[in-house]
Length: 448
Image (cartoon, rainbow, N blue to C red; front, side, top):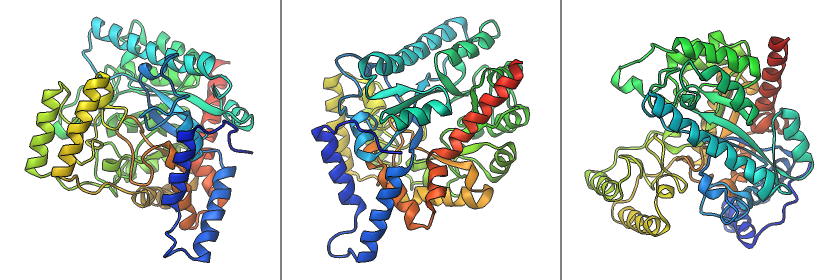
């Protein structure tokens, strides 16, 4: 198995050099043992099939003029994937929660189709020689062995499925468009399930899954789409695990025992997922990895004023720091700023940099903090039930893995902690691909 043969751009080569620099001890502290560890980690990283299960996208970055063959100011694109040795990524069909009305459902569906089409444009017309869409685990392995990057599609929020008149048939439609996982809610209760953010208010719409949500779970099993537990409420997730005839995933969640956030998985959910045979894709989202101290009053006021001036939702620039971490949608280099015109984006970034200089954000979580979550989950439910995700371009990132060009640093930290090559292969993709295979097998049986 070899790393992709895509040639590096100048930016990609520079990113690779930068990654090597931050991953290797300084000349003053470096020892032969350090050299040996880095060399061993690089060899393992080269042989592994590295897969990130959650990367947000904007259709504006999937056009003939502006696309992922270029080193865009996004956390994920082909040059950065090459530089960091990231082989495969789930690109996300995300639609924010809106009104549960015919008009709301129609608009959500249009937004979802635009993102499906964007991925197909990249893989089918813009760069078919560099990246290919995978529909099965076997596809992932085949494309990787052919020396190309791998694209997959996940759906974040079942809202675009619509109401009872369309939801079931759209599950099959989304499968045919390439979706291989789907979460039933996002930040806000959907027609299918309660959201995790109901925990803060104590207000619930369904006390877990709605009746339509239960029917959608059955259809996801039937067509072969993985049920995703990231974002729905704990009650909805426990019900989904109990109902699903196939293993489930949490596409981008960490351990609640280490960071008490409603987006994370508590021990009861982890144990239920283990019994189900699923996998939790630990997420490198700073505020899901490590609870930040509250911002100073001055910083909070400055960020709020900036968001108001640019017409962005509260929290768009984060509350924990560096424009990247409040727990909602829209942070990170591909989030809030991507909603603005190029001129406005540059202006907003300049203002944000000035705020950060005047009122420094608290330290972000690091790769070490992130791997602490992997350690915890492995000890709690075993090496066969943990994977890796970033939530890049949707707010994700930690110091040391803040874009795809820094992916090697995760493998390096795993090697430092004594994980074997076999275990690292499982964590990076083996467990997730095993679930994909099993979900497909269940679908075949259910369709007979």
